[in-house]
View 1 (tube, rainbow, N blue to C red):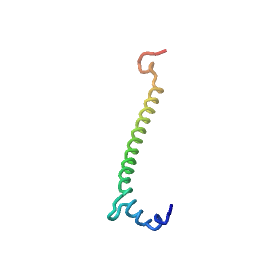
View 2: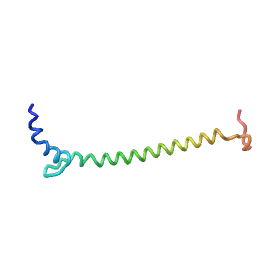
View 3: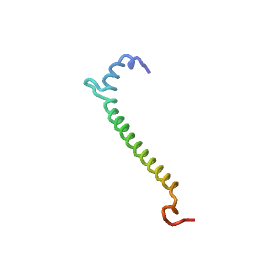
View 4: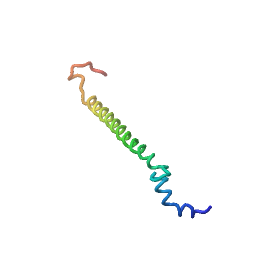
Amino acid sequence: MDLAVITNNFTFLIVQGLIGIGPFIGGTLRLAIPAIILGFVLGIFIGLARLAGAVRRFVAAIGEAGSDPVRRGGPVRA
């Protein structure tokens, strides 16, 4: 296997195959960049939703721990 073909045509492979400039538009990066951006944005929203749920559960747990049913006039549970 001769690697000289790859080294001699390296600029052609990078510019037209990877980036997608020129008549042979393969555009590996051109296809990958929208998927990367969409995944990043989707990950941000999923992370924020998980964080909001954790905060909501934390606040609810503090509210339950600090409540005294006798003081509120509610039923006393044994």
